Image (cartoon, rainbow, N blue to C red; front, side, top):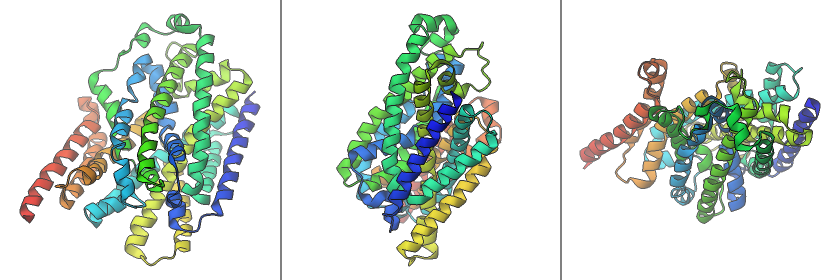
Length: 463
């Protein structure tokens, strides 16, 4: 059975590489590699945004939290959904900029220092996110082929993701993301009802799980809830991946329509994953002592599903992980080449040289992400920290670029620095452990205050 799961995943990955190789022949310019030649319609945009957002944080991080607290984990997607709803009002404006990166907007609205700080923050965040996608994908491979060494599985997954991303960039990622999105939607739709009946419905679940795992609000306090909800909401509102897809849209209207569809798609996928993890927790309950609770959906696919459905679930999990890893590897590579090399080092670089440099940068960042991946497999915790660094650093200034004319360059730069520094100091200085307050709360508060106060002061000085 494990062998069937393994080779199903291998076949799926070979299919993706084939698509990437075919699409790579059409990549001739930086716009082809980074924003798919601005050719994407509503359906493809929706598919690629959904596949990008639903990743390891959902299938492993949120699933692990469900095993820990029960159905109260339904609150976890609320921040992302609120962020996507707000993002729908910015999508058309973002497409209007005719940009390639978020940093294009930051410099056009503020100055070159905002661009550079945006690049630094993005690279820190995106490479971290890629690193734990590697571990998650390797965990799936390891489950389907237990005799394969985990570290070797990480190397195999790393090589695949780097090669696939380097082949054609957004030109192939967007279209294969559609296939991944369809795999996710159908896979989870089939799996949940089957597991529900296997567990004996609500009555069966209730007899297997502790009473507090059946309560809608369970053991999650309001301060802890804010710490879970805010980071993904702030990230998606300023997420360079989402904006890069807006820049890839054929028109402003299609960018906004795809974002509205994304709101429905994320709500469906996130809550279906949480429900599936809740039922899976009942089936895999071991007095709450499952060694790796984040893998509870993968375990139930291995232990309780028929072979054909288990293969579908394992492939679905791999699709969820891979799509996010590939997108978060593409975005920082584009930022470094576009916002550093082309902007400051060689503005006259040819389109062909930029494409090859993009591919080389993907390889370098992919290797760095692999090194980082050796440090932690606490998926949700790592995800939330990465989200917080970007969400409190870049998001306030980026949103202000669209909606607040009085935001100034010095205010934006101060805000970016404040968000990143407060997050890192609060996390590594031990203030979170001492106070029980997640870094996102002081970081976003001080970042927004810095943006507003410094912008108002500097605008008065100018006038």
